[in-house]
Length: 166
Image (cartoon, rainbow, N blue to C red):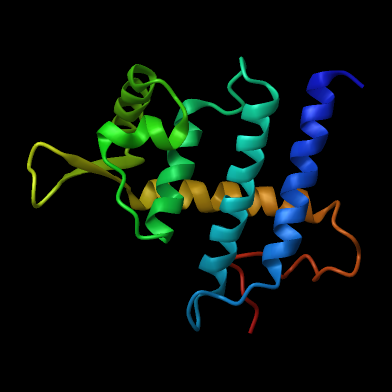
């Protein structure tokens, strides 16, 4: 097994461990279980990305656009504001690359910039409804892929995040 295969294996294990650990966590508020599940999956995915960044220092583990969307999805859930000038700190992506991808994401209708009320020179980044839907769809797909390799004592396939059967 080469270093890349080893890094992929460790990333998959990290995702699985994070998903199993967070699945028993209570929802953040009554009636928001689906949203809490998406946030837990996103956190596990971010941990996996960060492990890959450490293992393969010279290779970005994720497209910069996806990395930005992931951080904005989590910042919304954690009620944290991320300014345009700070996005590279959150994503570990060079500022020039971040700015280029911010323009692409904004042009695509996935994010928007909102001026800071206290300092009009600063702008905060927000996911649009379209950006949030894309991330939730991705996270649900990721959950489905991970669920296929979880032990059989886990919930049935219908118990996916964001999908509730009454």
